Each structure stands twice: as C-alpha cells, then as structure tokens.
Length: 266
Image (cartoon, rainbow, N blue to C red; front, side):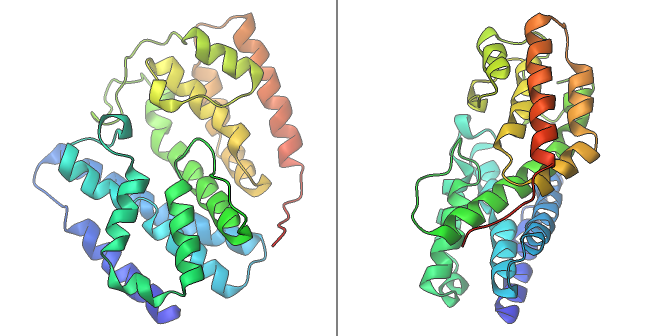
C-alpha cells in the first residue's frame, strides 16, 4: 500500500498542477482547492490515528482525503464554477475521474468500495445507508476532515464583509439578514440545505449548523480551539431573541460534544 499511496500522491500533485493558468481568478480557485486537498488529507490521516486505526486504514483515510475533491478541478474546467447546484455534484464527478485511473484497481475490491463510498458521500446532506462499517467510518472521517478545513477557507468571507473581496465562486448576496427558514432550523438545531443559501447571513448559519453534523469530539475541539465558531457568532447581525436562542443551544451542544470520548465500533 505504501508504494501505491506514493503513486497516488504523485498523480494528484501533477493533476492539480495541470489546471494552472495565467487567468488570475481561475488560478486562485485552483490553488485554493490544491491547498484544501493538502489540509484535508493531513486531517484525515490524523483523525484516523486519533481513533486508533491500524496503518492500513490510516492509509485508506489518507487516500480518501487525497481524492475527496478530485472532481472540483474538472468541474471548474467544464462549468467555470465550484457551485454544485449550478453545475454538477463534485463528489459524483470525482467518482467519474477515479473510474479513469487504472491504479485504483490496485486496491482490493473491498478497499476500493470503501474509498468510493466515502468520497461519494463526503458532501451530501446525510451519509447514505450502508451495512459496511468501514464505509461508514471513512465517510464520517472525511466529512469531519473536510469541514475542519472549510472553516479555515471560509473564515475571511464569513467573518469579514461577506461577499466583498471574495472570489466569484464564494460570493452570495451580501445582505446580512438571515432567511426565516434558516433561522428556525438554527433554533431547532437541525441541518439546512446549503444549496438554498440566499444571503451572507444564511451562509453563516449553515456553517454554524455544521457543528451538529460533526462526528467526532476531536474535530469539534479543533474547530472551537481555532475560534471559528466564536468568530462567526460575533459577526452575526442583526441580533434578536430567536438568534440568541439558537446560539445558546449551539454552545450547550458544543460543551457536551467536546466532553465526549471518541470511540469506534468496527
């Protein structure tokens, strides 16, 4: 597996660089996704180690992290956007890219199925049902690793002046107002469909609602320690009783989740 992993890293590095361009805006988007890939790959392996997985499954987690956004690069080439709702689901597109790579067949059938399931489910609202415990675990690991770094990526645009200064693929309506349906989901501690984001205020709430979808205490502790949650909350406006109710619920949940001890059942 070690040699195969090295082959995969080499291919992915060259693949990402093949999209480099002199168009500054496009190049910024490609570099953003290239850096994101590196961070998520590292987070995936670190989380797998924290969970006590053996070296083989740490390597599988690393592979999932490495390829989780491989579809983003073709997506931008074909559609000039990273917005799935305006183009194609980037996880599904990524699986099509993996279909073209002969070295994926060097994985056992079971391992390949785990990798494909995790990548295919890394960006969905919920993980699809599966009876395979490794598929479920790897999907949880990549979803956490991905969210952890997306908080980093979006921090300047969530806590600053919103759409101002953001790349085109991040911009939404700069209005700070939160849509009523998003507000009620926040108060209830649910999950919102980020494809329905209409304002910058909606975007902020969706990222706070991600907290409820983080699987491991390890991940949430790092999100909190980095100040991502506090920064977003501090930037919310206008403040009202419903919003404060949602914030209190969120902070109570964070305290309980961060106090949990991570465990796996595989």
